[in-house]
Length: 138
Image (tube, rainbow, N blue to C red; front, side, top):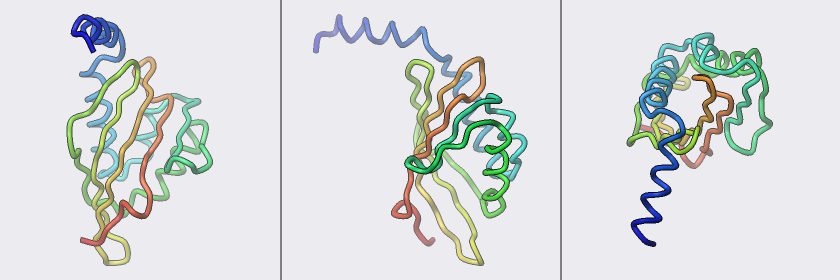
């Protein structure tokens, strides 16, 4: 691939989502996961956002079902940490992270990749890539 073509594609990407905004949204999301703040997480989402967690499950649409979803699963999270830098392309941000949870006295870690679509500084779509194979006892 020519460097001229590469430069053109990089310039086109610069017109998309601001990487500082994307990083702030990801950092807020991770902090709110650990704080078990479902309403705070819900505030990051657009009122008609779509959530698919995990990918392949029935998508939830709207802030109310999204807040309810997070309300059910946040109490067990002890830590959340990025496992590398975020990736921003267009109006999307992808990031790999680890969740550390305690479920019925047993500690687990889960490797997840989330992809957010961002519009007007809110998440309009979130897809979480994980399966039981990505969960392990620690």
